[in-house]
Image (cartoon, rainbow, N blue to C red):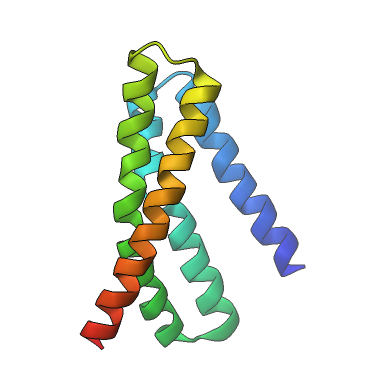
Length: 116
């Protein structure tokens, strides 16, 4: 039952943002920029396990993994402005994201080992 509630609530949030984006671009961008997925995941994890240590570890991980994802949000509009069609621009941006995530993960692991 919990899984069904999680899926429905999450789907409603995504659908609401998608609908809002058709009328209010800035407001929907603001909502998308919020870490709603992380917040929901933290709430579900706490609700199910009460394990704050897991939330602490996830928070640090999310922070470090958000940084490489910013490349996607810079590259996609840049490619579209250059006249690249949407699908190739999305694929190229996603590929760049995957490469940067791979490199970012290595840096993150190195940093985590040094910090702890």
